[in-house]
Image 1 (tube, rainbow over the protein chains, first blue to last red):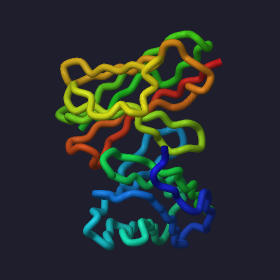
Image 2 (cartoon, each protein chain N blue to C red):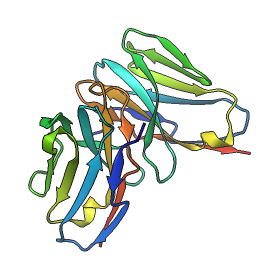
Image 3 (tube, rainbow over the protein chains, first blue to last red):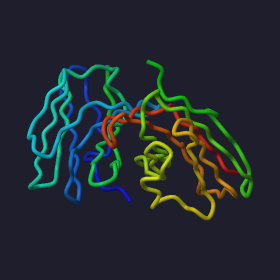
Image 4 (cartoon, rainbow over the protein chains, first blue to last red):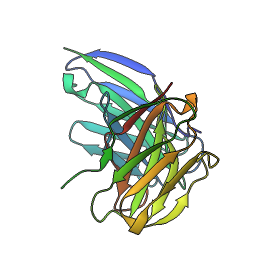
Length: 108
Length: 113
């Protein structure tokens, strides 16, 4: 079963714009992770945020976590064509469970 | 450092046949995972090993799927007999710390006809 659910399912933006995707989950977690998957490839770990953290940055990525609402958001600033990929949240609630993904397309 | 190696990259079989996938994790990673990813969905955990012991196989269809991790390093996942609904990408991943920062292989794309 999928623990997390990403929103939107698909997102298309112009290069240079910011992209925001959201993840909602159902049970208590130890941490939440975001992964990227390029077409036909395996997943790549982007960032991890622990349950006692509210915000984390890594380069052009900003992740927030609201455990009271059981939700997280991933912001990619100044998007590039190379950011085109599917993005998944993964929650550690005893086992690492992936969401349904957001397919991001950056239009050059 | 070398990444997670998987083979084969693609496999096409007929239903009721058997198939096996191989995974070599990153050296030193004690935790190894097999995920099934159906087209358009997120990966679903099939089995998780810690060294050569099984930590979680609650979502592994044990009547047809089996997995082993000999000597706590390489792993194989087998399907026998395959069904049409087994068509998916099978991803192997490993991590140094359990359930944290997984490194994924490129996957095996299985088509069952």
